[in-house]
Image (cartoon, rainbow, N blue to C red; front, top):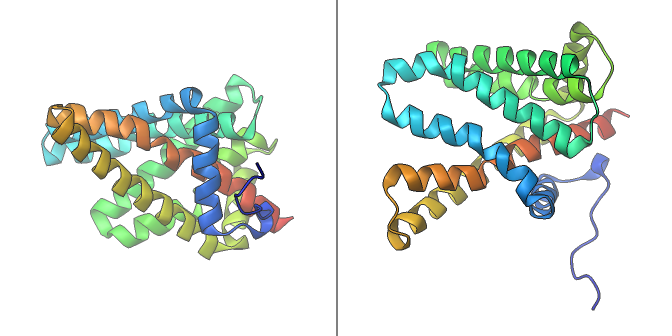
Length: 215
């Protein structure tokens, strides 16, 4: 039987919808390896719901940022097939942590829009450091250049991935609570573990799109 799926466009021409489709495809083909990506965001969801708002604001740029950056580094290695050294991966992790911490502080202390723009502009710093042999300063410039290659595609893809993950997670949590008799925190933890890898996989694939657009 012939494959009924539409022919995928090359990364330089890939639309947001196709990026999401490729994200889902990669996740499905690498399910067990990708599932670990959901542990970090799932932990932040459960812990964030259990602590006070003030404590959550403290944890967001610190512990949560470190966990989410580690997941992004792992996703970049998994999706892009990198064989970077441990030192290189550590630099990528620290850089991603700093970017997320600064963005979250901007969003909380100033306004959410500047924080989101900051994160969108430097969203590809981690995969750049994981894949490309450039120093940190050069990696920042490279991530900035990749973002400007097609910023609408970049921010639109990130927002779409976030919305898809949020809606899917909410629906799965509802099903687990309604039909699986799971407690609220168990439902949200499990749904986050299963769904949140889409964000990290999609962001890593976005690097491929933007790099192709630059080249």
